[in-house]
Amino acid sequence: MQKMAIYPGSFDPITNGHLSILRRALTIFDTVTIAVASNPTKGTLFALEERIEMIRKSVKDDEKVFVDSFSGLLVDYVKSKKTNVILRGMRALSDFEYEFQMSLMNRKLDRNIQTIFLMTDYKWLYTSSTIIKEAASYGGGINGLVPDIVYQKLREKFGYQE
Ligand code: PNS
Image (tube, rainbow, N blue to C red):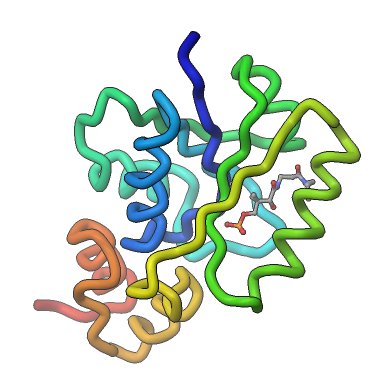
């Protein structure tokens, strides 16, 4: 039986750190579905459609990767996909409390669902969508931190031309 992991998040926008977690997860799972939260608790810079488009263009045509969106409880979405694995990346200790809380709440909501964490590669330890957006908003050089399509979109969003 094929094992699918659900990789949920806001992906506002997807970064090279996310892609690194995805690639590594594909060495463990048969397929990974990137599940984009349609209305995350925090406001987003990019609309849902833009976030999905950037992910699709970044993962290209990998037949082991699916891109989808979800609303409501993550555990309900995971169940609807007939799997029981949530995949999350973890950076430094600063992520730990939030991830711990989220995985315990998800476990309380459904004991059959397991959250698997992959530690980020040291290269992406200091990056996050939030900090990248902030740097980009002031015209900072964020090349190498995000896929090309995201780089272009961030520059467009903040009014910087090549
Ligand atoms: O990339 P993010 O913003 O850290 O992702 C957070 C996300 C979207 C995975 C999380 O907020 C979520 O699962 N939202 C869906 C609502 C839900 O199930 N909440 C209860 C679990 S804490």
